[in-house]
Image 1 (cartoon, one colour):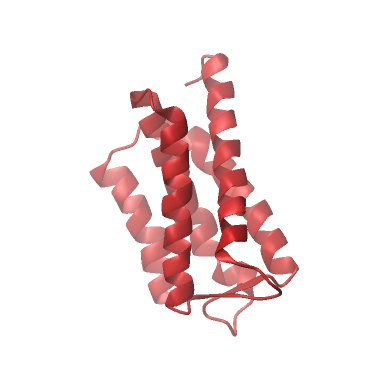
Image 2: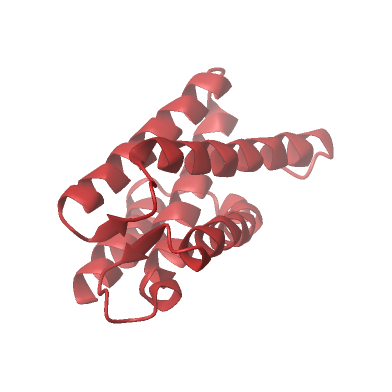
Length: 148
């Protein structure tokens, strides 16, 4: 659990806050939305026993909490930070989907995440596609309303 907490929560937020220095307004607007989207998609995946997260003896929703509140909201905030500075919006969204899928594949290979009932990395890609597309649409809405 310490490994998951450090590398799925502490490290991503340290990178976003102290290395990249994402605007705090962006974080305040995007991270909660991303955490909610992640929680919905993650709960659905875990509730139907498609996946389990290390440590496996712990309730999966609790074990995945560092990811729900850590790496995914941090990545969502970083994505919007880069979208605000770039003209390559669709390319960035696709890159984030692919990087997130690759990251999860590494976790599966390291036996930190296990798939069941026919779940594959392809379905994981679809989940990230839904999640990051929702973040992108939320970003567009905030831009339209002149909030970002």
